[in-house]
Length: 242
Length: 242
Image: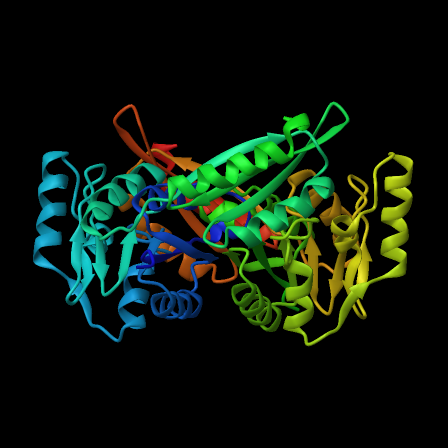
């Protein structure tokens, strides 16, 4: 059975303007690979209603799971929750359990649950809350879309609470081999290897060091014995260049 | 006149599997902002023909310029050039000027221009070559799509040769202010500010330090005097919390 698939949507003007370098995509990619869920696409859009709604609909149809990051805070540019609701033609409003989480938290820390903070309790109808142990304001899951914060520590905590609830597949395994030959010299044998092992993904990542050319070859797949077999053949073919 | 728009397409299994953390998107975002070209979307897809073709067509229609990175080397998983050609129903083959670049380079460095390396001279009909001062194998521009290498040093060199040929707009300017108040306390005044300055983009990036909450407020736009005016008002409103 093929692995379940996932897509990611990063939301925020600050990524597209170059101010902030996103780190959530790389983190999520690694976590999904461990769990055997194949990340098939990632997108970054700005704080723009039409762009968010369009991307959510496209990715929700294309993958088994969609993970979003960003745009669920208290400020005017945090429009993710209402866009997710709109993408699925679902009503959205302040939900009592989310409001209570925030009320208790702000009471305990001596801050006011004002109108802006109350926006973080707006949850689309039918959604499930995602726990936020870092700063309390919850994420949520609606249909196959998991809506999470952009702050990396909060995003990571939310991923940690969502992922165990999802059915995974066979974890992605990988082995790599450094070959001290130019990528153009490796390419022919590598293509033949890829043709003989169509169940594996074989990638070549060239480098140049002290004027010499080389490439790291990475073989990925879900069957460790097949990866061993391909790697053994590769090592024999380039015995003199390892 | 609104600024020209751009989209980016990052191509490579290694990004989606979590092996490699992309850095080209963040670099390009910063360079485009300086030149006054608005990056409106970025996507990451794997080494998959249908995914690449679909994304190229969608982004080419949505933005004035598309920049791709990855998949133009000599190995079997480097399929970007033929996918770009297919996306525009354009023939592709080894082009003499590109072949000569490679032939001279490999002759000078004592390596063989074999069949694999010759793949890097395959250029869609009607394309313009993009100079590669780092490792010679060229990128190319077809229609509004600029096709570049994934290796960051080569990608950056190619961006440096393409960007000066494009018509830019007003560069994106920004100022930021650190406010030592919780984002929920800043949100109300910030929304009012955003409503009064609809020509500016106002973002809030919360942090927590030594148990205290705060946010960095970033105001972006193309008119420095307007940014000054908005920033002055913000600083007055939060005079006691700076």
